[in-house]
Image: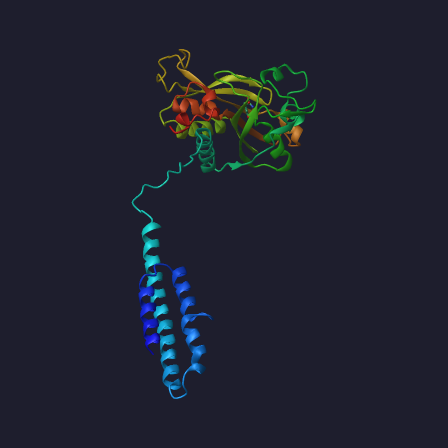
Length: 337
Ligand code: DAH
């Protein structure tokens, strides 16, 4: 009995100094394992005098149960300790500043493009698109620019083959739309165009917005009204607008449209080359021969068309003097819009 009591004491001493779960596991094996100190005592039961056996057996069993309970208690304490430690060491400091993820934003060209299409949508124009790799037929031929026509010199064309080009303007979309649809039509066609040219005011790729309207009685006055409203929405309601006679093979009559210089208010400056005017788009009444190419009767239908450069309008709107800035992807430039 004394041996059992000292076993109990020694267990308590040892269990008090346990500081981790693996140590506790070792202690459990030492006392309760197959060859554990308490287990050994149970095995020696037969060596005890029969009259003492029940009392001895009972005490050993109580000791065993006591140690089992103690181990569970200590285990719980150790787990709580570990949890507290992990909370301290793995804690998040919610007051630390977050990691900065920069936001992208709309490119100035895209911004102005959306503004242009928005203004024409509000006038009831539909948006159509066409391919950037285009047949010579749509880019030139059906727009009344036959092969070897001197007007082809106006556009520095990237040829893919004799019959295939990178479109030099968005005008071919006129032909594609009229081929598949019948009037009345009120269309704008925004997109990328390509010309072999590069300097302070030209890049090999740039953007245009084409527009056209076809019906049985469209007049030049409709063209003037639509473009004037567009210009006044895009710039300001006071901006002067001027139509100047010009030439395009696919329109007759043709015009170039100028606005009063927004930098000097028409007084004359470096940007408007002292003229007081800035050219912003080409336009005209659709040539009867273009209607013949798409199978419309030119006796029955009339229409106007126009085309504008998006980079040029953006440069004027924001006072940018070098077109190449749009495509250099310099964030110091792009962040300003
Ligand atoms: N396609 C012409 C160009 O890129 C612009 C143009 C002028 C388009 C007159 C038109 C138009 O639709 O009527 O230079």
